[in-house]
Length: 284
Length: 267
Image (cartoon, rainbow over all chains, first blue to last red; front, top):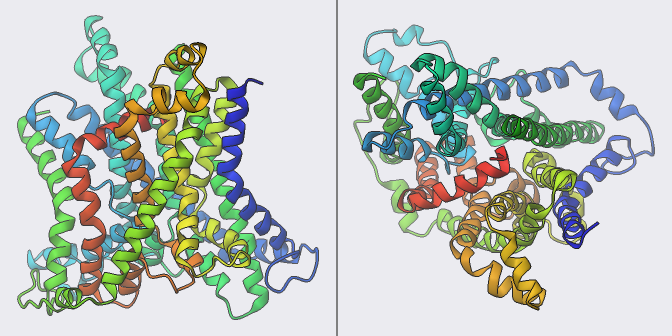
């Protein structure tokens, strides 16, 4: 191993030490060795949690809303990048406007989601003012709703600038030449988009889309503000269990934390894997 | 796309970029904005006045700014050598190194916070501002590390090799060759790390234990208690600085994207 490779290993170790410490503590608490109400090695916590249907529904809710939100953001980013890719002032302004919401934190995004989509949000007020719905029978609730529609839409809006910024960079560095080749070979506009631009973008955006999925799934403040109380989103369920008055249930929270760690690990592995997939496409 | 479609797209983007500021501004001064009124009709500046009077929001801004500045600088200090090392690796080494960098970013912060809570309490860091900063540093350092892995992939390693073969010591190579052309990238890295800290809620909540009041925590608690006017003021304080920085230094955003894209896509 070269000196640099060793340095890389050391560096990687430094950065993951806190995660490993947290993971080990959580894992040992999940089997009753540490944490509140620890009674020595047992699978009681694992058994209780895996028998709890609320837990499975929480996981399903969190993963499905996160996937839907990231896919919506991907669609928006691909559309944006392929439409406003020129050098005209309009296109440059559009690219700039698209990334302005990038640094808006989750907690503010969630509050905006409530202000716009909530039961007395702008959407409800304006549709009522326009006479489309009577306020007595207003729009179906899309925040705090079991399907997480308001949450999904808000998170899609929040993640679009992140995916768009990567999409702009991809098209700027490799899209133009490929498109030109396709056009020279006689492909029409639509064929060029469908056979060249779209595959290039989707492959290149795969890692960022997976990252966005993991960010949405891991968000705590957004689902606690916009999400339903039944099913509880996974990060919210963790927090509730951890604050439970019953010490045994509080210990069970560690199994849920372990599940959240697993989502992070699978997510990180998936991002690396998807990155390689894109590289293969490049060198083929 | 037809001009009308293009104009519609620009309008949507403008609303998405400017709308949040307008809506939060309006909410922060709306006195009685009961549904279904489409617009507020009576206004009050009480939430802003309480800010001018030096209320708890001012303290939260100061705490958040201090924590973010500390985290930004420390994150860049850790991330520069890590990004450099990983960018110079090849094959499996780099893949593993990058996967390690993605891990703290991908781990849900609530899990990271609760998993580390015991260790932080044992170290006497629970409920302290320093503890909160160190907790923020975990995802921030890896975010900035990913960024610098991209930065160093774009720099030419032969320059460093040349300096080394001419007899420069490792410290000299860093000081004279590697770092000088990267001043702007390092500034971006510090800003990026500070931004991660500035927005953080779950880690502050868990490690701060309700004793460290950061700005996002204030937004969170105002929202939870339904005080929308104060929540809007706090939200504006939270988003205006980063949006201004991004808008003013538009180039910073393009630089960040240029280096993030390689780390994420392998361009």
